[in-house]
Image (cartoon, rainbow, N blue to C red):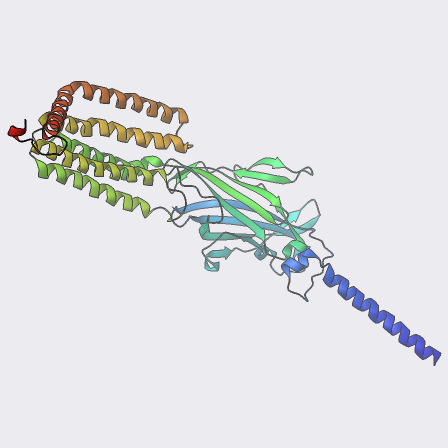
Length: 418
């Protein structure tokens, strides 16, 4: 009987210990298990992230670039080198390494044949496998500023990482190999932290610099390329035609005031042409985000074309009421002063944006120069058309005399009451 009681007590103690262990494991679980695995699953963590996977990335081909969809299209190759023990948990460890912002789909990912190599440090054989990604690499998760478009610099980024929960027993190393590769920074133990490869080519509308990768942590590798946009092509396609159309709209004031139809038709043609060019530019850019300089430039140009239409209406009205000197002054003001003011606004807005491609000293000099030119044109027009101000003064004096003659009631006084 005593032996039976001892056995029961021991069973209860063992059960209590088991329930305590279960409660403790649920109360303070391993965060790696909590984040990477569903409840009830475990992985042998005895290796504790000690198996190295050496990654050698490279950018091979440029295929396209889209500001509207925020992606760069091309081909990236990733060579994965791993020791024999890396295949203990995973049949193909190279498949655990992925480009996280690759958006074209698995159909554009190709795995090449494996190659056995010798590792003199460990004295064992290792395996290297290359995997290629051909398609679109999304930039939506990274800063994407188009405020200086087309005078801007773009940095495209790529994230290479281990699929969860492989970080439990794998760790990434950065391999600096290939033509022109150079080590930029290393860790304290001598392993590579940052490596760069030359690009030195102009592709998809940019002049690209080097392709650089940095080991962010044991499970993430960040790569990037920086390119300067070739704005000369966009200047020829959009900006130069818009300048011609804008000059057409201002030069309409050089036509005689009696040519009302040609003057208005020329301005309307310039307005419609600028609107069409603006729509083409908008089709190239994303619908959200900051307004680019080129979009703002077209909005300013369209607004000034509307002011030109107002100037035509004022000129026709002044000619109809016989104020010819004032009409000529309005013509010259819209032709020269408004043109200078338009250029001043455009250059000032470009200077405010502080674009990296254009030196601030250049835009500041242009802005100050246009201020001086605009003030000079205004002063000259006031002096040259001083007869118009005399005409306006005489007209104002005549109207005041009429008001005084009519008296406070607004009616002409009767002669018998004078």
